[in-house]
Image: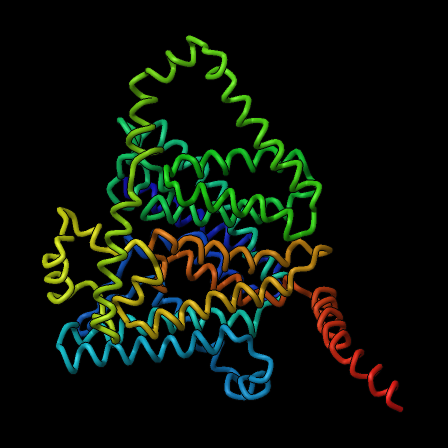
Length: 469
C-alpha cells in the first residue's frame, strides 16, 4: 500500500501550500506546515542513506539543514540583545545539551559502551529542538502561527478517519509499524504515527486547539470534539485517557471558567451514576452484557490489566543502576545495560520492553542523574513560564502551556524524552510561536500582575517609613 503514502504526501504538499498562501512568511510557513503534516511518514519510511556518513538523512535532519540559514541571520546580535529576557527553561535546555554530550563522551572514552557515531546523532536531536525553537521565536508572526495551527487541525481530522478505519476496517491501513493488540481481535489505532501513544499525545493537544478555536462555534465543536475523543479511545492507551481528563477539566479552571468546570464535573459524575443504575437495579441485561466474552476480554486485557506492578519493579531497577552509574550508561544499546537486565532478571522476549517506561528515569539511566535533574527543571520552568502568561481574555495563550503539560504527563509511564520524537518537536514549534499567542494584551496583563506583586511588598515598607517620619 505504498501508493497511499505517496498520495498523502502529495496531498500534504498541497495543504501546506494553501496554508502558507495567506501567511506573510510563506516559505517558513510552508516548511513547518509540511513538517507537521508529513514528518511521521518521512521519518519512518523515506530515509536517505549517505555513503561514508555515520548517520542517515532523516526528516528531522533535513529540517535542521533547511533552518540553519534562517537562524544564522543576525543570530549572535539577537542573542546578546535578548539574553536578559530569556526564559529560564532555555538555560536548562542548553545545560541539558552539554550534559548529554559530556555523558556520551564519558561512556565512549572511559567505558567504550557506545559507538562513536552517537556523539553526533544524539546531540543533533537536541540541537534540532533548539534550532526549531529559536527560528520560530525569531521569525514567527501571527499569520505564520495561524497557518501552523490550521495544519494541526487538518492533520487531526485526517487522523480521525484513518484511526477509526484502522479500528473497524483494515487494521493494516497506512500503518508505519506492526499493529499491536488492544484486546481480543482489535488492534490499537495509530493513525499516521509509529505508535498509538504518539497519536494520543497529538490528539490531546488537538482537542485543546479545537476547544479554543471553535469556542464560539458550537456546531463545529460538537462535531470535532466527539470524533477526536473517539480517536483517543481507539488508541486503547490508558495514560492518554488520563491526560485527556486532566486537560479537559483543567482547561476551564485555567481560563477561570469555574461554572463551566463545575458543570463538566457534575455532568461526568451524573453520567457515571447513570451507567451504574442497571447494576444497582440488578438488571439481567447488564449481567448478560458483562458476561459477554468481548466485554470480559476488554476488561481483563486492556482496562484492568495490571502494568503498574511491572513498572515499579522496573523503576526500582533503574534507580539502583543510576545510583552506581551517576554519568549514565550512554544509551540502551550496549552490553552493560543488557547484562544488568539479566542480572536483575529484567530481560524480556521483545526488545521493545527494554525501554524504561518513565521519561525522566530513562534520561537518568542513559545520561546520568544530573541530566535527569536538569531536564526536570526544564519541564517545570516551561510549565511555570507558560502558566504565568495565560490570559483568560485570550484563550489562545493556553497553547504553549498545554503542549508543555502533555509532554510532562506523557513521561509518567512512557518515555517521550527522545528529542527526535514528533510530539517533542511539536512542543518546540508551539513554544517558539508562543509570543504570537500572547500578544500585547497578555504581556501587559502579566506586567500589571508583576507590578502589583512588587507593590504589595513595597507598600508596607513605605507605610512604616512614613510612620517613623
